[in-house]
Length: 95
Image (cartoon, rainbow, N blue to C red; front, side, top):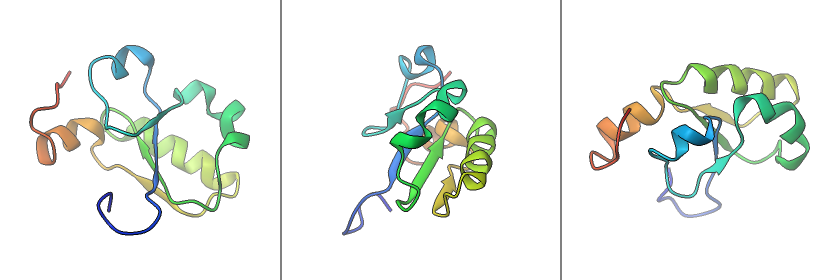
Protein backbone atom coordinates (compact mmCIF):
# COMPACT_ATOMS: atom_id res chain seq x y z
CA UNK A 1 0.00 0.00 0.00
CA UNK A 2 2.80 2.43 0.86
CA UNK A 3 4.68 1.56 -2.33
CA UNK A 4 1.66 1.96 -4.62
CA UNK A 5 1.40 4.80 -7.11
CA UNK A 6 -0.81 7.72 -6.18
CA UNK A 7 -1.32 9.58 -2.95
CA UNK A 8 -0.04 7.57 0.02
CA UNK A 9 -2.30 7.19 3.03
CA UNK A 10 -1.87 9.31 6.13
CA UNK A 11 -0.11 7.23 8.78
CA UNK A 12 -1.65 8.45 12.02
CA UNK A 13 0.30 7.18 15.02
CA UNK A 14 -1.72 7.62 18.22
CA UNK A 15 0.95 6.37 20.64
CA UNK A 16 2.60 8.48 23.32
CA UNK A 17 5.88 10.36 22.68
CA UNK A 18 7.91 7.92 24.80
CA UNK A 19 6.69 5.07 22.57
CA UNK A 20 7.65 6.95 19.41
CA UNK A 21 11.14 7.44 20.85
CA UNK A 22 11.56 3.64 20.75
CA UNK A 23 10.21 2.99 17.26
CA UNK A 24 7.99 4.45 14.57
CA UNK A 25 6.97 3.83 10.99
CA UNK A 26 8.75 6.32 8.79
CA UNK A 27 6.50 9.12 7.57
CA UNK A 28 3.91 8.72 10.30
CA UNK A 29 2.16 11.70 11.88
CA UNK A 30 2.12 11.69 15.67
CA UNK A 31 -1.08 12.65 17.49
CA UNK A 32 -1.39 10.91 20.87
CA UNK A 33 -4.79 9.32 21.44
CA UNK A 34 -5.80 11.87 24.09
CA UNK A 35 -5.20 14.73 21.64
CA UNK A 36 -7.28 13.32 18.77
CA UNK A 37 -10.46 15.34 19.49
CA UNK A 38 -8.50 18.59 19.29
CA UNK A 39 -6.67 17.45 16.14
CA UNK A 40 -9.67 16.33 14.07
CA UNK A 41 -9.82 19.65 12.23
CA UNK A 42 -6.20 19.14 11.05
CA UNK A 43 -7.05 15.77 9.47
CA UNK A 44 -8.64 15.22 6.07
CA UNK A 45 -11.79 13.07 6.38
CA UNK A 46 -11.59 12.23 2.66
CA UNK A 47 -8.01 10.95 2.68
CA UNK A 48 -7.19 7.34 3.38
CA UNK A 49 -5.85 7.17 6.94
CA UNK A 50 -4.08 4.26 8.61
CA UNK A 51 -4.35 4.53 12.39
CA UNK A 52 -1.41 3.04 14.29
CA UNK A 53 -0.65 2.15 17.91
CA UNK A 54 1.36 -0.54 19.72
CA UNK A 55 -0.93 -3.56 19.31
CA UNK A 56 -3.99 -2.19 17.50
CA UNK A 57 -6.35 -1.54 20.41
CA UNK A 58 -5.96 2.22 20.81
CA UNK A 59 -5.86 2.68 17.04
CA UNK A 60 -9.13 0.75 16.73
CA UNK A 61 -10.75 3.07 19.27
CA UNK A 62 -9.43 6.17 17.49
CA UNK A 63 -10.62 4.84 14.12
CA UNK A 64 -14.10 4.31 15.56
CA UNK A 65 -14.08 7.86 16.94
CA UNK A 66 -12.94 9.30 13.60
CA UNK A 67 -15.66 7.30 11.86
CA UNK A 68 -18.22 9.00 14.10
CA UNK A 69 -16.72 12.33 13.01
CA UNK A 70 -17.41 11.54 9.35
CA UNK A 71 -14.16 9.88 8.27
CA UNK A 72 -14.85 7.06 5.83
CA UNK A 73 -11.44 5.91 4.57
CA UNK A 74 -9.96 4.44 7.75
CA UNK A 75 -7.74 1.44 8.28
CA UNK A 76 -6.70 0.14 11.68
CA UNK A 77 -3.17 -1.30 11.50
CA UNK A 78 -4.07 -4.73 12.85
CA UNK A 79 -1.47 -5.76 15.42
CA UNK A 80 0.06 -2.27 15.50
CA UNK A 81 3.77 -1.52 15.29
CA UNK A 82 4.47 -4.80 17.07
CA UNK A 83 3.06 -6.72 14.08
CA UNK A 84 4.70 -4.29 11.63
CA UNK A 85 8.10 -4.98 13.22
CA UNK A 86 7.49 -8.73 13.14
CA UNK A 87 6.12 -8.91 9.58
CA UNK A 88 7.52 -5.92 7.67
CA UNK A 89 10.58 -4.49 9.43
CA UNK A 90 12.42 -7.01 11.64
CA UNK A 91 15.15 -4.41 12.31
CA UNK A 92 12.64 -2.15 14.07
CA UNK A 93 13.12 -2.03 17.84
CA UNK A 94 10.24 -3.52 19.81
CA UNK A 95 8.92 -2.95 23.31
